[in-house]
Image 1: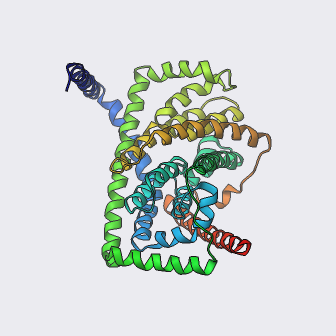
Image 2: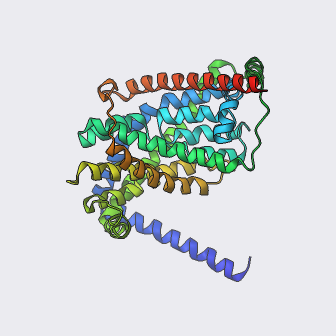
Image 3: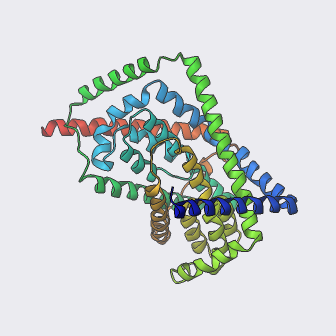
Length: 396
């Protein structure tokens, strides 16, 4: 190691040590603020995140272990290749992410990458457009619990989901020049290959169902505790940044860009907070006196970016894989912009949603509804894949 590289490494270590010492001193002198922020983060994790995501985490582990994902990968190949230039197993991730919320998409992508069901480039593209907020969060928590305006729930959800799908289609178009599509096969051949893939995966796994379930619960709890740690830590960070005036300073910087773009000044502090921790920023925006139109725009921007807290959770989940994260971060910025533009268009032509049909009392009840939606979406995708295979075979 050269002298300059050594000095650089020492300097980086000194900066990290100084930040940790400063953080420790803050904990010592402001223990009540740290404790209150930790309690807020813990409540958000225990009351919302834990019950909403645990069933999906366990289900994801079991579906991979039983070979169901391998089977779906074959059945959905005719649909996923022309749309996204991805293998059929990517449809499983898309359905899972859109019915449960972040960071389940990253968990599923990491699992499939370790199973070699996705290449490195395919995993990077897939994780870039399957980072969605929970439907419960967008259709109930924000419009009903925060804004008191149930009718805007679908506008928020549609702008968020459509922006992600546009990014996915764009990445598929970009990869079309480098990826190759497999030859068309008749539907009965796809079904036969999918069943073979199912049996082969079960034989290679070899675990009995009881052990598979135990491993799924253990791995899911470990991931959820990691996510809970991130939520609590970032809840404390946002409190520290707010007390130090850094959130206000960030809002001043955002003012240079967002005010000319038409954002209300009252929403800037919430947007700055949402850049770090999404839920806190959304609550601040909802509590402002800005017009509803302006609040929805700010909410769409924050949801698209998703906050450094969720992004850090994705980083931690993908840390033990070879998946690079530059594309993921770039697509978060793209989604923030796209979802805001789509929100403007949707607000001009409002779409109403019967949110009263969505369970709001218990996240566990929502999980059952979301599991049904996940199964229904997968069934629709499988039928669409078989139908496309049938059409391709007729052309041949």
